[in-house]
Amino acid sequence: MFYDKNQNPIPPPSNQNEPQVIDLLQDYLNSNNKTGYLVFQVHQDSPIYGRLPIANAKITLCKLLGNGFYVCKVIMTDVDGKTEPVPVPTVSAEFSRSPENVITNAAYDVSVEAPGFVKSEVLNIPVFEGITSIQNVILTPVVQQVRRENFNGNGN
Image 1 (cartoon, rainbow, N blue to C red):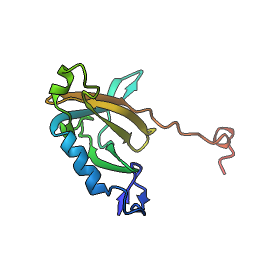
Image 2 (image 1 turned 45 degrees about the horizontal axis):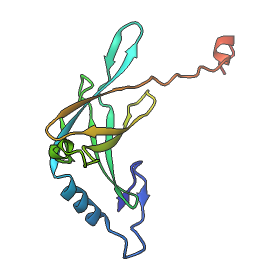
Image 3 (image 1 turned 180 degrees about the horizontal axis):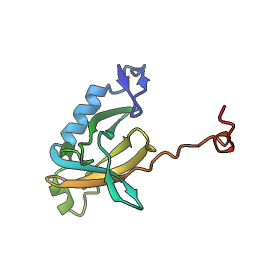
Image 4 (image 1 turned 180 degrees about the vertical axis):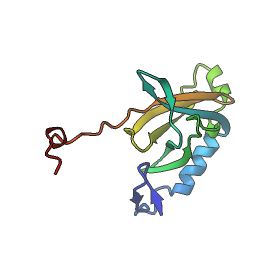
């Protein structure tokens, strides 16, 4: 079974002439045969306590391969709100040294969620060969709506 970036099941292509996910993945890996790294730091900003790390935040790192197929990796933050460096495919740094090349990096999308916080998405995170990029993500706490009756003493 295949899934979209929101983890909803998607049917396989009906047209046998369309590239299959394995072909799309192989093409992507062939053209992005170098490695870059991403580290995520997830936190909330508190006006009283400053920057507070968010442990166990779920980060879904995705790349669109084509024809609606994504390849995704799910990682979690540690107690400091950080992840280990995640190796991801990217293009050769040689491409950035030539003026005729338009593509100088690979780009990935992430969604970040944690219980009690509003989900956040970051699109087109650039990844460069041999470079570890740190991506800071600030999550906003969900504001709990308190029923008005609780303040009126009618807490039924």
